[in-house]
Image (cartoon, rainbow, N blue to C red):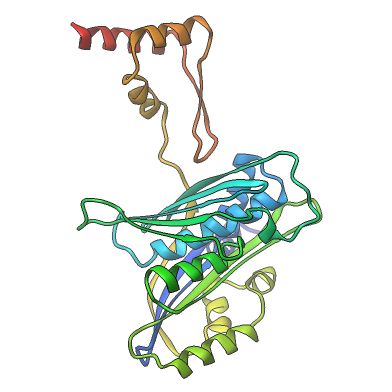
Length: 301
């Protein structure tokens, strides 16, 4: 296989999100292929199957919501649970970046349905928008703990928008994510109850997104297969698991500490810094510590 052929295949199978509007103006929708970003998140965080699957769904849902924002406006989704999974976090920017993490007990049991791993808890949505000085937040109780149902419930309860949400992940026999994707369809003011019911009925008859992705269908073909109405494409862009963390950003935060704390870190060789969002590790050397101490002394003087 030539380099050119490989490049074409890479572009075809890249993670992408499409936003759509029905030609009759009654619905808007988003469709996403999130296989690669989900694999990257699982690999970075070294996640076992269930935490990886739930984080994938959260990253997929956040990316879909962010697709309807502008520029670098952001969506933050956060689920807090009372069972084995304690917290799932995802942050997505409209430009195609998403990052996140999951906190869980290491001794969780596999003999439960996926919705049992969160248990009772809360689902929180935050929107950071250009024209708002404070984030817009909505909080609902977890509906099922499978993320898709919780997101649909949030739209219904907090935004009063009927929304069909599908989030799908499949893993191989070793618990490694192979494919993931999602879609949501939202009713616009012109949609009748019958129109909305028909959408739900047609989606129930649709194949799973991961079944289509397993056949190496690109996002455009998947969209044609799943969306049950004629539509116009509004956006079509790549998405990736990407974090803007850096060693310099960590050092900036360390400059808010006291000199004695920094000296203690140096003496005790506490030089490892870990980004909670992407699990990247940074290490401070003696020059870094000396620089931080020097800058803190300059501020004191």
